[in-house]
Length: 101
Image (cartoon, rainbow, N blue to C red; front, side):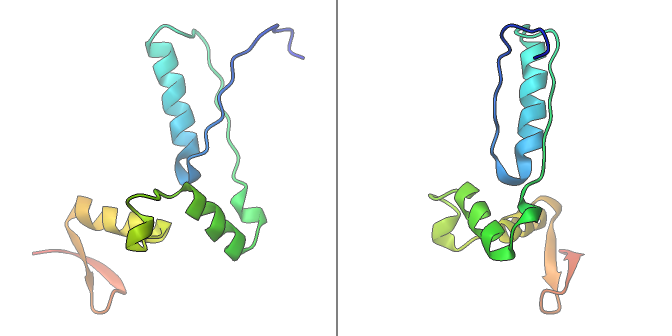
């Protein structure tokens, strides 16, 4: 199609982090000397489906060993990560974030 006889490809499916994983992989390919030129692309597909379907898709991408038994969802994981990384806690019933003392 482009006049290139053989082009290695990799598909990443990491839910909300797919473009990050693809870009990191491309950087590592160049840094390791495996590739001189790389092309990274991505698309968001979850906006084309219902909330129930997108929730199901994200559940497939969650960690079955650590996250699912705890009942964690993607928003829950991101919220817990934010709180831990930034020393933040919920304020007044969970409507706002504030710095912990």
